[in-house]
Length: 518
Image (cartoon, rainbow, N blue to C red):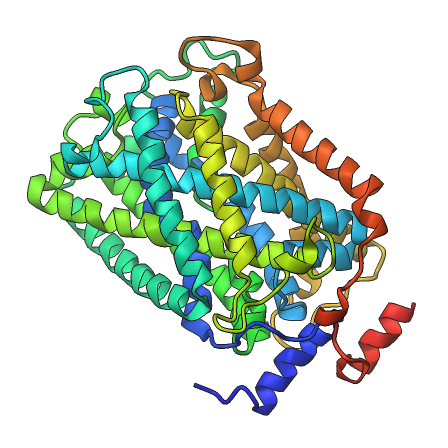
């Protein structure tokens, strides 16, 4: 491992000092660790296994086309983020990028939305335990037998609580422990995914033309199959985000300006290829495309029915490990974001939140608080049969909004001629403007699609209430409006880098000092 006192490490610290901060987090993560952080947040097996049932029920086998569609849009966003990671490898990537590209107000809003989205995402990912553990053994259905109205939702909260407690403890004990668990889990997930692809291919009973079958899901939709497809696309949108985590660990990574851009793009590309093959081959190998279990149990049913009980359950244990490291990565990213905002005195109790444990080299208090808040979200929804899609959908909406708070200001900077990519490393060059326009257009379209108050997403089962159907709109409006009102009336008057976290003047590069004066 390179000596932290080396010239390269000093250059990495200088990049942090350009933002006005002194380096406090332990810089130990190598290239694969950075890649693992990005791909574990995306988590191929977690996302595909968690919402396949929803995508299939909403759009039939043809829902598969939402996978390349979402990838194409998110790849535009990832390209923009890769450019930003090369120039600004700093903790709390979304927050700091939006602050630098726009202004402190936009930065706070982006950070706030991403922070709440991350807390919701931890809860959403943790719920995936329910979709897998009871399939392995009925022993894990602690609440009832799974047939009661609230059995599944309540048991899901119980299992998710165990996972969130685990991620809280691991993150509190430092980035090295987190990185070791995360790296081992990602390696196992990648190997398991390749093995699953091979096994499903061997058992294929139909050709790839299966993805042209809509299963009649467009019937009754106001826009025909397009309406069904847009609903089903939520299943793919849930998987392909979080790649910015590779950049959010920039202050704990070695040579982050080079490693983070590569990690962002490789994580998304690997997820697209492997995840797309898993979904396609699952459709090609399942015995009957009309099996009701495809719309209720999803890929777990496919794996068990195609591979048999022994091999199928072994694969589901791998899925469980993938869910665990995914939740761990989401929790890690949320903690770094909270730390980044707190050292700017942009959160209540900022001094305590920004304190880095001298023993563990990590901000412990935000780790614990984020875990508690994720548990609170689960408890609020404990008897909600639609808990899986409601919590997941709200989390994705807020992530897309936070991403727009970066790609939007970046586009404005390009149009005004203010954007300059890093002198060395990743750059889009002349493709920057069209890629950025595509990223903003995609983000706007998908955010509207996700927040659209459709009963199929937010209130598909009784009891039907208007506030459930409009739940995402109301939640996002309250979080966005209430949060920004608090910032504007209270927090913005206090904002500024806390003295104990500020870089000494001699540490700040000359160019950065001139920018700050300007």
